[in-house]
Image (tube, rainbow, N blue to C red; front, side, top):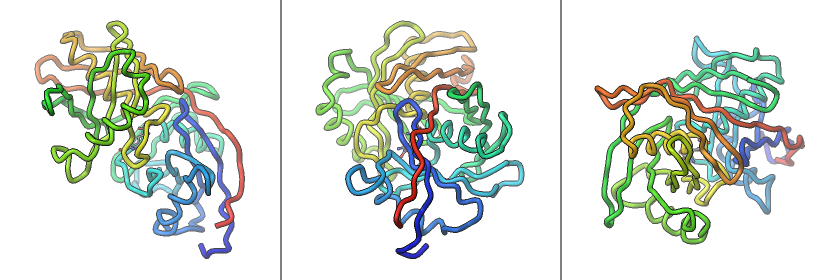
Length: 277
Ligand SMILES: N[C@@H](CCC[C@H](N)C(=O)O)C(=O)O
């Protein structure tokens, strides 16, 4: 890609978490070029505007149909992006991949299932447990749902104080306890046994986003943990500013681990364009 090469792209959003999507199966652009361009592409004033970049690549894993390459808006790598995965799966399906397919992010394989045109489910092969930490008197749960997350409880009123959430989110995201990688920060309010309201401060966007898929999974597991329920299979609703996400999971009361993680929710095409590289 030189400075004069136009970049064809599709803008998509999943529950308001928005992405620039590039089909690079023919290898027009190197990963290094795409990473270097990500902050410009994602800039909301000088670029297209998005929370992250999604790239469809030929499969780099022998059991995958394709590879998902993801970068946060600032160009940083995240292990996984749940809403991005739902958008890219729909994009891949429109490009000819079957309704049920497999993709990899780095060396991890995920399963996608296009439920209908605007609802996509991703199955995560992740097994996770929860670690408790207390920072400045606040109880925080730490967990990995494809990428790094922490979860804190908030009341409904506090969840509306977005400037304050941003400040707190940023402080925790850079807190020495979570160095060197930092973390995404989820503020939740439990509505009932299987419903939580969520606001996420996203690392790499360095702001609240309208939804975060891996954060929704982390929040559902954290809310389950705080309620100390001992059943084995669950379905939770996570209410974000951008829409509702459904999180299904299994719990092993013996080992206190979570598995069979599934994230389902809306995915939409917004527009197509060409970015003057
Ligand atoms: N929005 C994403 C999470 C993206 C990754 C995150 N910002 C990180 O750095 O880990 C989602 O839907 O999961």
